[in-house]
Image (cartoon, rainbow, N blue to C red):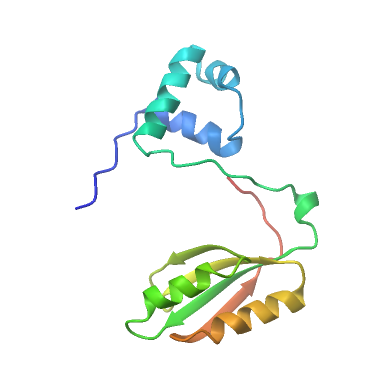
Length: 148
């Protein structure tokens, strides 16, 4: 049985929203934004980390750094009983940043990022050639309007 998610009060939710905008924001800045003391915010962060509500922090590259990179969503249809095998193989592909199980016409959706269209074409072909993959459909990202 999976553990139940910890209930979050409105301050926890606001704190998490601030961290989504800038996970490296100093505790003092977070405290000021929330109208709380620095020690209260630090205690909340420690509790959220200890209880695995917050499991890590990540890096988002600037648009300038990502300029020229090709982003695509690759929808994957998997043959019956091959999902875990396909997941293991896709996990090995360094240019796949996210793999999610989805409802609808496809079984999995991957977010892939490569240096060029040629690299993306090769990556999508390699996903399609994995044992257990029935077919793929992809959509190239033209622009990102916002990201949290």
